[in-house]
Length: 167
Image 1 (cartoon, rainbow, N blue to C red):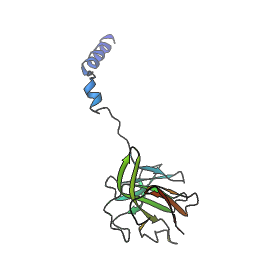
Image 2 (image 1 turned 90 degrees about the horizontal axis):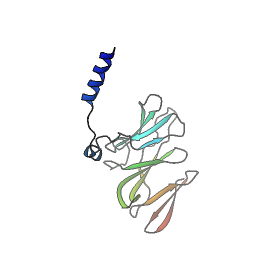
Image 3 (image 1 turned 45 degrees about the horizontal axis):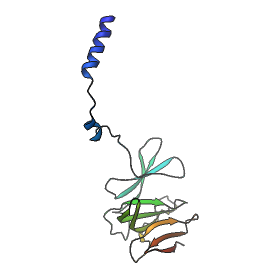
């Protein structure tokens, strides 16, 4: 028993690597993470955009497997986008606000061209209106925010506040 214990200790000592500062600084031990995950209000699903920025897929928390594709730049009508940078849902989850052509300003602030995409469904459960509409003409927008009822979007452009009615 003692011999087995000593053999295990010697094997662990030989297998042990020295930890050097260059290993830590190089990012070798950096954890892998997931990006652009947005949980849905139902508590059972989340959404995530793909790495290419061309789709938003809905996944089940229980399985981690895709349930459906909510937005795809190749299938949206009147869409000339190749990819997008980020997205957000309206408070009721019936609309998507999609950001493209993002330009950083300072730290976390940015300008982007935003588009609205309705997530309405017909009686069969399929997306009924997949037309992508520009939020506003006249240049990129900053900090777009949905109103609590989801019928308005406020944003800033050139130090002016604008409201867009979505009715």
